[in-house]
Length: 72
Image 1 (cartoon, helix red, strand yellow):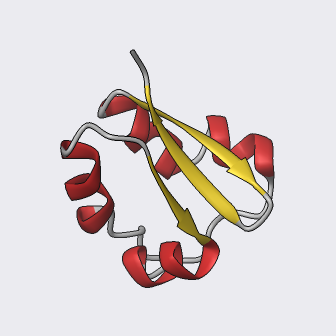
Image 2 (cartoon, rainbow, N blue to C red; image 1 turned 120 degrees about the vertical axis):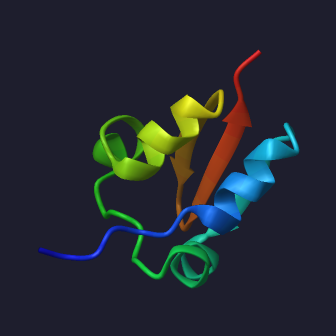
């Protein structure tokens, strides 16, 4: 079984309550895992999507960038 991504650094950014973005490279550095390749999966079903939702965010994937948008 593969190790799960470590969202500690990303969760700290979410606690600030502001929108932010990460490149694929920054996501890899922050979590220790590569960003999922499928856009739909990443935005809706992935572990990062579930983590974002739990913190009041939604995930948007644009080419090479993952955006965390605070849901208001």
